[in-house]
Length: 195
Image (cartoon, rainbow, N blue to C red; front, side, top):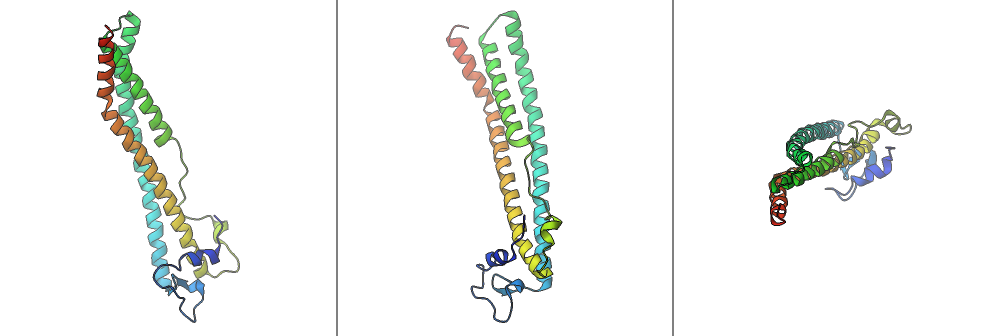
């Protein structure tokens, strides 16, 4: 992500101080307030820690999704045993219809889990690339302030990505809780049809 120091510092202006402090350049101001080197370093360190936390969160979500997939596949395999037995013996009962519906349900949940939660998705890196940070013509403080906007963007995209994956994971887990309803509906429909 290429840096634009002018637009970067301008986006920090709207916070608490509406007018710039006279005698200071925008490269030493954030939100129109004077920022010390110590404070700028502290903000940068907090941004790095925040971004690292989002990476850890992404790892935890991925591990939870993998564990959930294991449970889904076990449920599907168990139900598939009954469905395969019915196919092999050509003996369809209400129970085998329910087991088949249960198998199909968990197949769909597993496929969605892999697609929405386990497929590799990009996540913004913690640090910017050196070629983006090496901007001739700007002093270190100006680059640090511009990089704060980069951090804010990366934190926002990582948080959004994690929230989307977590929402899918939670939704699929809730759908799995409803799996007995799928079994019951299919079994009752088969029984009503005389199976």
